Length: 207
Image 1: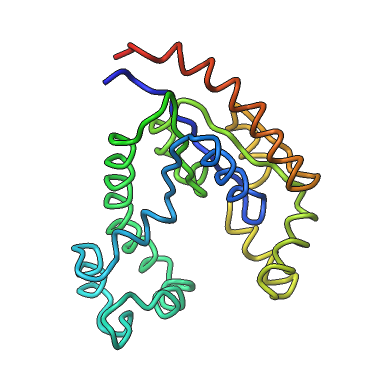
Image 2: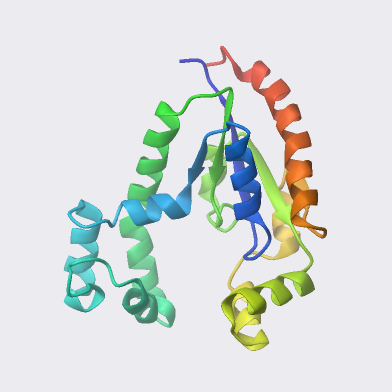
């Protein structure tokens, strides 16, 4: 199969990544989503869920045998060592799942939606270009508190745990500034899609 252009879609929380990803999908572009992969690898009956339960015990399972995400999140939130162990267990599974989806996807190029692409460091080799959905921090805070109903202090803590806006911008090959309406962002994706289709032709036939 000819090599296809891979776009790594990322951005801070409440930046508009999901809206951009949805528009790419509407345009017929395969979108391989890291969040969806993270849920798939710990679905009931999977080796991933078995490994998590073996390491953290039945307290992270519901009565139905599914992963209790809230319990797991509370467990690792203030425990850096446990968080690193969880990442070591799941990240290889998530990556393998996404690669399998990418291999069977159709289209001249594909989008790998990875929220922690910049934070992940070594994930840069997975994509050919990084597309950052960029937004001012004040707008992020407003959207995050409105969406989740938390306090501004909680929202700031979430932002502080992610890569900085400047770090994402430095890592980006392409930036879409999401300071307007949803319609504005969708139109910006449409324009970028045309460019990516042209760039994708350069990748076809490469090893």
